[in-house]
Image (cartoon, rainbow, N blue to C red; front, side, top):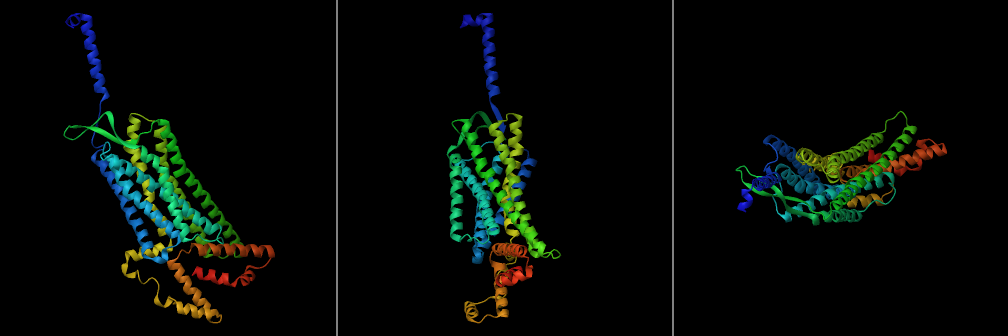
Length: 437
């Protein structure tokens, strides 16, 4: 050794080798601060996520409370809305806080069990929320496009809800199995007192990176692309049905603006808003997930994505769960009254005046009594008030719209005035007149 070091060339070669190894060790070690952002940016993220968290908790909590406390609200559509509120509550409880923490600090601060459980619950809640949106679209499609077909029963609705959660569980199981907390070699976290700690991450450890790409595409297809396509197709059919009914109705009374036409416009607008908000809120996040798996950005591009663009995309996607109660609750007359009752507890028991409630004995007496026009009108009016307050009036409106369309078709084919056709369907006319009240 001394002979080697005494030689000029060998000593210089040894020094260069040591310097190269030292430089390689220094450059291969990456140090990251504990907090990813400054205090201003961290406070902005916290306030933004806190806003949608509170909106999600309050809105979906009120929807669940209204359905549970009022047994008259337990219809098929309201049951789907209740399940949507439950899944959105899970999104708010498990997705929003953990995503906020993950966006604020470096690495994963929890255990491996929490990594698997949080990822599984997040995926299931998001999947159940999306599949419930499809179930609501199917229910309204059957109601409006095929109103005379048998209505979905509560038993079928409960079975559908069970299927929704089962599908969400099955599609997210591979992610839960592959999720694991592992230490990243050569990457350390520096605390405020200049102490270094090993850095751990919670991510999917697939044997082959190509398998992760395939799984991401499967999730994108089944949790975004296919549900969105189904929702758009069914809502498009609903809009076409309502438009054709409005055209036929305007032929019979061109100078009269029917209140039913106003309801049609409101329904179509609501359905368009639902589809657009769902598409726009989730599109950025799915685009980024596909981009990171297929394009694999590195360096400054990756830091920009993970530090700023991903947090905003997650916030936008989770905000859909906060807006759902407004769309499916506020635009529904029953939930409107429920929200008002929640804000004014004293009025919750005085929704229906006492004189409008018909007892069972009175209904039996009316059934046995001879037919009387005034009595029938009062009885139908009372039932109309109860249906307007307590039950889902969408089905009744769909039936009336279908009857109106068929009435116009009969009048056009036979050359009969629409008022003459009304005489052929006196019960249907009376029923729809009560529904308009």
